[in-house]
Length: 179
Image 1 (cartoon, rainbow, N blue to C red):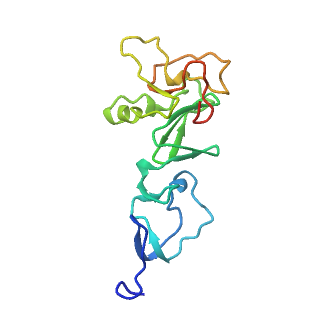
Image 2 (cartoon, rainbow, N blue to C red):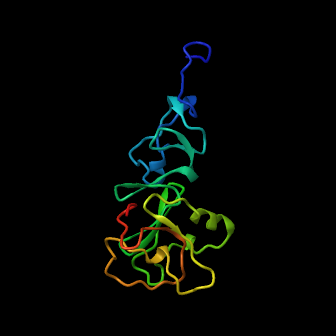
Image 3 (cartoon, one colour):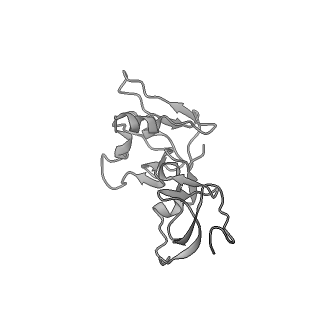
């Protein structure tokens, strides 16, 4: 096969390669690499270097990859609590706090104060969730770190600092990535 004879047509955003690998080229593979896939050379259409195939079949950068966690798909920058842990979707990988370590309820990325980390938390919320922004002058306010879920609705919360993010309406609890 040559570019001028029987040229392969690739979907928009993908590139033809005479020798590419199909292994671990998807957003899902960022957190769950296919260990059984053997690296080999094959002809076909592939995402450009540094891009990954998302669930819609589009090539996207890591920063736009969804996270796959506990059978559900979470959007980039989504923040949620699950079984007494806080989780944050970043670059196709779900970062969760440890359940075993006291005082580590919230992932470090949520406490970062530099501009890019704050921007990641300034996300749009899926209905019926609404964006909650912690007030700067009231250290007693509780945010996403104390969000109620099906697993913790009857437990109290000790906040080590308010975290802005998407919250379910009053009287609702979060279950996975839904209210």
